[in-house]
Each structure stands twice: as structure tokens, then as C-alpha cells.
Amino acid sequence: MVAGWLEWKNRGDERKVKISSSSWLQYSKAGFIIFPALSIAIILQFRGIGMIPIGSSGSRIFLQSSGLLLYVLTLGWAIWASIILDRNFTHQILIRDNQTLNRKGPYQWVRHPLYLSQITGSLSLLLIFPSWGFMGLWLFFCFFGPMRAREEERLFLKMLGPEYAQYQQEVPMMVPGGWWIYRLFHWK
Image (cartoon, rainbow, N blue to C red; front, side, top):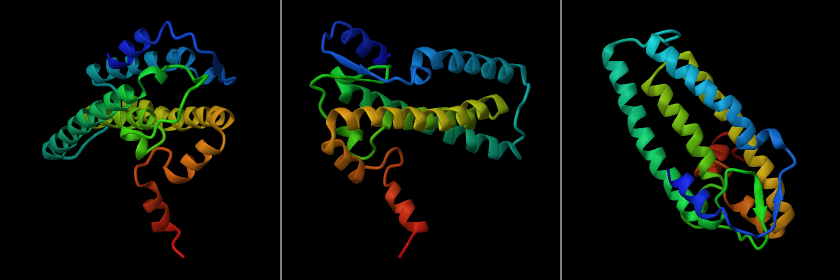
């Protein structure tokens, strides 16, 4: 809802744009994969087809409760990130002239909080509705989000240059505090 409002609000923005050449990563094209896949996953879920067996009912309740909590947190995170972007929010991979680097809100912890929210949001659906269909949707976002983020970063490096390169050095791509995980496995 917030994303739709921001797209509508920014519709008359006449600033020139640089659009990504990787057109298959644009949401208009990816939507032909995402929306049918989500629809199929929901239909299969409610038909009871392709369910992932979970041990006891206590385990199922714990997973579903965890998934619901994760969904609420993800929704809040995504709304916050979208509002912070304001005039720079778009569903396309593009950069507007005079666009500035945003380091506020969730962008101070990760460079791509909206792609992170897609991954955690689809994971929350998998926890709530454990099925192979939702597993496929989550895996798709685990693949699609980072690919799209890298394409955006190529454009940002061209337009913002050293400022964005410095941001890349200081802030992890999608995992908050990700450098701790890296150091855990690569200590010297």
C-alpha cells in the first residue's frame, strides 16, 4: 500500500533517469514469475498439496507464531524503508538525476532493506504455510533480490561514484551486521 502510494506520488517526477539495461530484472518482467508463483503456492497450500511435514503440533504452532512475528517485523521494516526513500522510491531499477545517497533509517544498516524484506517476508510465509510452493517462492527471492541489488549497485557506482563505493565499504548489502558473520568464519 505504501509502495503504491509512493509510486503514485512520484509519477510526475520529471527528473531524467538512467534505467538498467538488465530488463528481465525489472519488476514488470519479474512479475510474470512472482505473481503466478505466489498464486500457485496459495492454491496448493489451501488444497493441502505439497505440504512440508512438521513434527508435532507444538512445533507447527511455534513455527507459525515465529512466521507471523517475522511477517509483522518485515512489514514494518519495508514500510519504514519505503517512506525513507520518498521521492527516490520506484519499482524499476533506475537512478534519477540529482539523486542523493540515502543513509537514514534502515539504510544506515543495510544498503538494500527492501530486498531483505522480500526475503524475510517470503520466509515468514514459508514458516506460516510450510509447503514446497512457498519454499520455491522464498528461494526465488533469495536469488532474485541479490541479483537485482547488484544491478542497482552498478548504476549507483556510475552515478554517485566514490561516495557510493565508500557506502559499500561501510554498510553491508542485505544482512545487518553481516561483517560479524564474515569475521566469525574468516578470523585472522
